[in-house]
Length: 373
Ligand code: NAD
Ligand code: TYD
Image (cartoon, rainbow, N blue to C red):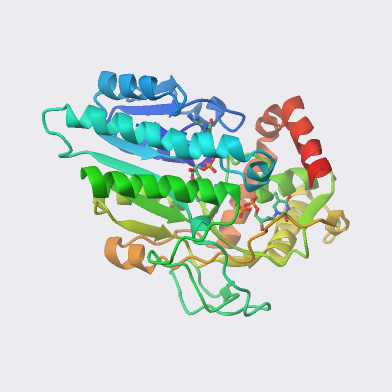
């Protein structure tokens, strides 16, 4: 069972599993909040090994019923509220879904698995978390320096680090936003179910993802869409914050590998050693969109608009994923320039998808967010 499979990352995980494992019965459990969209899965929705179940992870009785009815032996848990700006406006929803929802799923899995003949044998609760639980790193090299790490895909194109520290699996949790606090709390519950009840659990903490089907409230799809519509590009603060970007299909491949080969009770960090300062990333996006739309170079630069910074804006995230690389042999497959090109093309070719979800409700939220900042 994959939870949150109608969302951005979940839909890529569902697609990969449905296509790669015809012998598995794959259940996609999703509440279909504003972020869930079954249009993300049109290409596989009629596959015989796939079933969609609409349910809320906070509904414990329903989770237990579904666990028992479908004899679920593995869970990849992605369902969550995922946007930092929304968590600043509405922290309760984040505590409810990310903390209480994860807890109700854990408890339902525990009961259903304990009553099965094999108990916990052959079972796995795999929880998808974020690097944001580790807090923020310092920007000790604001202009960027050569990264101490390489991957086959990172090549000579862009290879910077903006500080000397990286998040390791052993880095102490230090979340700052209501979003990261709720993810951290859920991670603690997942570990508690292993340590207290012996339930086989596993956690991965991944850096920022980008690619097709990401809801256009997040930086990359929002900016592609705004450039297309010649709307302002709201850069928070000075645009100096640093994020570590990974193409979503590389994350899905890592999840597949870890689900099958990862060791229970372990944590793996997932990232591609691909740090970008927001403003530099934004310039790459503008250049790519302008080129693909046939606009002259520099045409959309004037859309850049510096706005009030996000409250409590974490300065830098940078993942050290050497454990995953050395223990399980995972590497990102795409260079960032290729990934961005693919992503921009996808959004420009799928304008109906974007227009359908940026409906009236979303517009009202978006305008309200700026009033409340
Ligand atoms: P998303 O917001 O695109 O999708 C979340 C999905 O969860 C949606 O389909 C939504 O309908 C579903 N959902 C929300 N509340 C639910 C509930 N109560 N019951 C059932 N389903 C519910 O999120 P995403 O970006 O795909 O992130 C997926 C997971 O990966 C999250 O746990 C997130 O914390 C984690 N993560 C995301 C990133 C990133 O860059 N996007 C990076 C690292 C980790
Ligand atoms: P986001 O995609 O929201 O991911 P996260 O906050 O989880 O890292 O934002 C990525 C970066 O871009 C982050 O530093 C905030 C910044 N940002 C903007 O400058 N403007 C925007 O409109 C958005 C959505 C984000």
